[in-house]
Picture 1 (cartoon, rainbow, N blue to C red):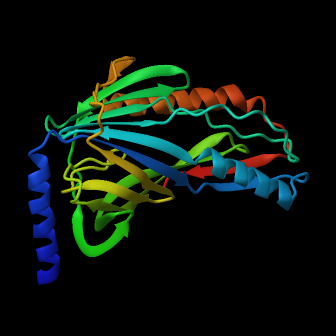
Picture 2 (picture 1 turned 180 degrees about the vertical axis):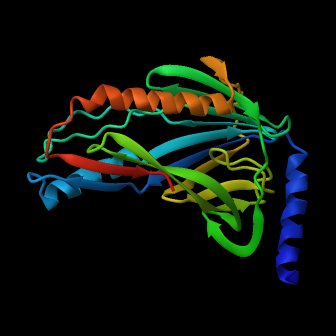
Picture 3 (picture 1 turned 90 degrees about the vertical axis):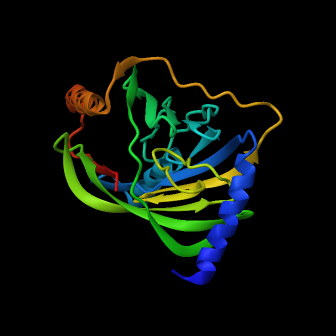
Length: 273
């Protein structure tokens, strides 16, 4: 192992040990954006209309999240924002993605998580065990704000979904992706946004396929004590059961909307990966 790299890691671990002696808490704000592959085919659809729709989608996927944490627990949820007024577009199409009401609670000490999830208006509470990701620690470093961050990567088998209005069906494509994160031992907790965790420092950036999550603000040991509570609302299910429910709800949505499609205007949206 590179001696310089090892020296830096040892220094930060010593710093982390000193801080951990305190009642350590924090609040981190993350900005998220996602690339969406949108294809639209219509005799009435101009390039300008396609660009406008793509811009709407891009804006809808720009979200802000807050991660509150202590030594062993964290709570991750989307920030509330005011609804924007409806504005007619030249394409006649308006895209809106409802604000997520999902809340993710992780207890890394007890190796468990709870996630409150809204599926087409019905609330579920997913409870399951927390599996530590298998990270590969890299030597590469960079600065994010005032923090020195180290690179870590992992691979994950995922399924990408493509929805077409022409067939009113979704097509699943399985593949293996690489998730890259940047963590800082200067904040000695093993938390991070979403299900990313298990590193010797807070994760400040995530590059996950078409999605990028970047920390924009951190407040450590705020004057007002942080209280972290697991979500309580919704029907309790496991992760496997939740996946089955999501698939069923998607089929219901497709069947309900298939009769409303106008001939000659088709689109394909790919999300995931």
